[in-house]
Image (cartoon, rainbow, N blue to C red; front, side, top):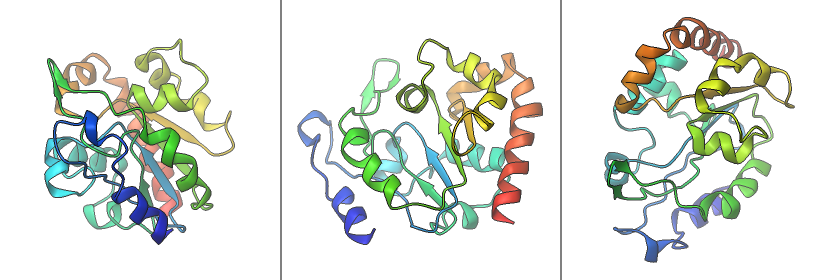
Length: 193
């Protein structure tokens, strides 16, 4: 695992396509029990090199009901974005995750983490890549969250991105925090003890 993580952190696969120097961000450990598959680091994470080291991370930790110490304990929690580097700024926010990362690195990482008991798919990019329901919208997937608890080998939670930009979505869908977040916290507490 150490060699694989070093290879990922040294990756230059999409260097020519980025607006800045690559800085792949990943957190993984063979003993990790929970896996977060998100989109891509934001500008602040690009600077710090720490996954979810921003307002999105604060909200995600709140949804999960865990503190920073638990969140950054790689023996408990792994973080594997669809794109490992900040993709840059677009016209209406960050660009989509670079498409090279997931096919190159994800399966290699997954085979090194045999103890995953719960996976969180955050945002549409992770959900479309991993789930066989590409015709559904993110809202439809999140509304049907219970189906993802039983139809796969390990339970999944499908979540919207915790970005402050999603405040409108959260206000339109109050059931999310009342129903999904409560169940997410219960699952995480049961796994982490």
